[in-house]
Image (cartoon, rainbow, N blue to C red; front, side):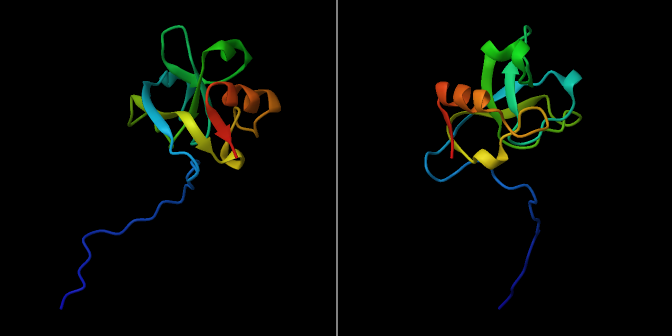
Length: 114
């Protein structure tokens, strides 16, 4: 009997999704002028239709939350949760915890922080 292993790895990043309502995830082209995108970061579309970190200047174009870390040196697109339940403690607005206003806007577009 053999107990062979081809490869082992571990992921240090905790999932931002929950088991309550499976997420709907889409890929969006990244505006690489804004740096890497962390999992849980709220994102919007800019005028060119590319994903950028959410802020009040692009508020009407809120699209969702980055599903997993996106290294812009390696990827042209980011996976974005556009619907479903997510862990509230993993949501980022910029580099900080989300405002109540953002949490309400996420619910308005069908993303429920729990």
